[in-house]
Length: 207
Image 1 (tube, rainbow, N blue to C red):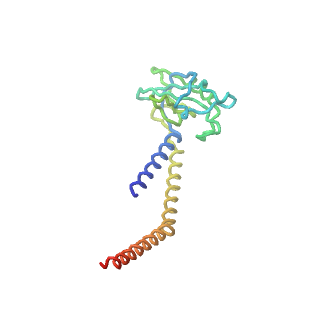
Image 2 (image 1 turned 90 degrees about the vertical axis):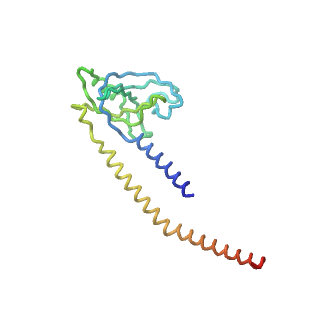
Image 3 (image 1 turned 30 degrees about the horizontal axis):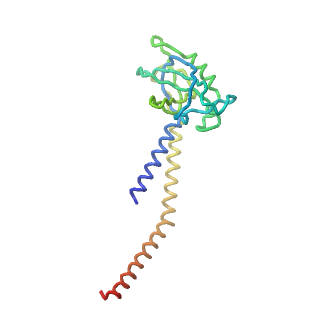
């Protein structure tokens, strides 16, 4: 039973960590090299795309999506989608994807004259399943070493850890006051029942 509980706890922690890692904002330092609009046909990975923007037709199997292409300081490429999140999850309330695309286009630079930016985004990049992180803002920085400190994540995770600790303490108190006495009563009743059965068996068998 203990192994089952630990397994369930591990699954819950893994799921919670994955949701937080996907949803919380992250910063990348990149050099923007191109912006474009692509017609995307949604398939099995549609859960990782946002809904149509406000004013666009809904329920379509494809639509135009903004993309921002960048190069990291290490030389590795990274591609972002640029979609409105609207009022749905995750709660970024992003409605300015067209404005963000214009700002990104204005910051395009070359390797000879790099213009570094801090790209805030959420989500993952996975080439196998064609999953792209969603850019939420872009800001010019002086050098690749000027990556912003992610204060939101720091504050959120501290508060979340405090909430989890409070829930654990409340659960432990509830278990000591309600569950443990019930378990003790059950064990005591079970031991008493076993004793009666043994006495009955001895009377029958004479042993």
